[in-house]
Image (cartoon, rainbow, N blue to C red):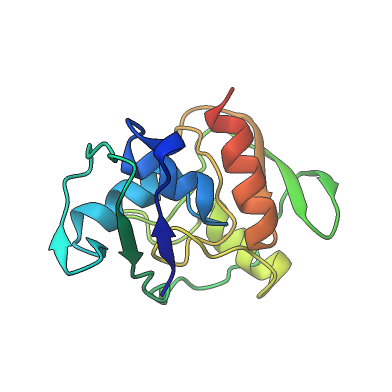
Length: 164
């Protein structure tokens, strides 16, 4: 369980931003989710709000739960692969293809196809195993999609996308 110790230089910084800055593979959005779920506590056990600004003299315990397994089936769906290496895969997603399984679309998605193509070599961060997905495109939008093949690449891509 990571402990984050705040310094006077950090005073006034939002806790979610500080967690994302200090912990590898934790985005600011994920930090907010952890705070909201009660998984971030001031040392001593006091819960905090997601918009909490640190004072410069506290410490926080961060409980990072193991990712939840999803039950998404790999499907042999042809992919238009533009680029692939050990860290990422770039796919030209066609119009009409859903990116991630959801109610009403449990199969035939990009994730189903990626699981078949990449097997277990997709990232799984964000609280649940969301195989490789760093960003989304709407069902009716075509275009290039990046998928991460490991957590390090996922965190780096998510950080770059968030900073535009």
